[in-house]
Image 1 (cartoon, helix red, strand yellow):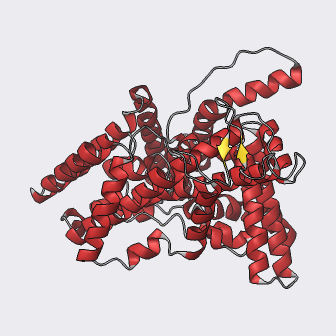
Image 2 (tube, rainbow, N blue to C red):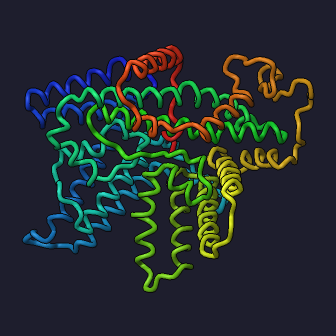
Image 3 (cartoon, helix red, strand yellow):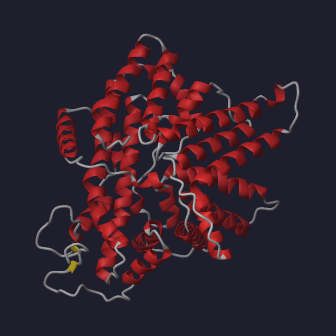
Length: 489
């Protein structure tokens, strides 16, 4: 089920809220949590019920492994070592993720290397598999290190499947989440949280429906057409994707956090104006912050601790490898690996720059950072290296600088001979123009972000009018099914 659908907004969410708080009001707290778990499973299986057993098996498997790790010292018979149990759980999760996400990519590369003709399995990636798998991997690591206390199966299953974050994050930590589902103060309907949650939800929905989906038309035409782009066209296409990805993913995060607040549950902030970052280290403190926290805690730190002697060079190696793994986690393709390697390399350069205490004016640092991020996102979006190369060639001017027409610049439209209006005299339907890109970029650089606005939010008549107008405008623009970009990762 999608946040940006009438079924979710008008039926699923109100009914789930009513059932949860009604059961809590009757002091049936276990039943209330069970109703929220059931609703989350319905939410997940709405797209394809055949994948419901997968997430249930994953939950039971990881809960069992976690239980064995936590209770290992109290067991009377120990047939295997504690480390063996942990490694088995780790291997099981990686095999699960590897089969569904990377098997076809592996077969493709084997065919290329050995000039074989092995058939692809054509596996459809289950929604949210990357997110609920790494969430549970973190849980197992903490179980192994003795950091887990709450072992209630219902709370654990709800922590993993809680529908606001299930499909695209934020990535959650059990220590922050499981106690919230048991806290008595969270069982009572909080009208202030209802106002805050709706405010944040509709801001996120506006980002998705009005901004990101509008930019998507230009992005699709530029990346997927196979047509060579001149410099102006390529830059507008690449900037459109950079902005689309931000408004799409941060919009999802806003909606997830907003919906969770309705249930008095606090999810971690995932974005903090990343395009305002003055260096790449700062960018990763602002972009997909829950992933950055996971990378630091469960990839970078263990690698650094594994070194007998920690040196700057070894810590930079760990930084590079952690980002390379993060790139591979995002998708099965060489473009994702290269994207991760680029960001790992950029972080190393940034740390070296700081270590040498070399000067960097903040405006120039921002420019270098934003240009690097924009170039790297071409790899993130392109389906193949050839597509990425085509757009990047255009960006550096190898296909010319300007469109052929000077008085009315245009990209060609595959179906009609006119691709996309760039410097234009009028806004036509769903076309995303250069002015849309400039306005969106200005908003991301100048305006307060949604989390800042939510912190300043106070129920008032002005906010009520704002919320009614935004929600009405968004609702009349939900005219088609549009998945969130991070569903594919």
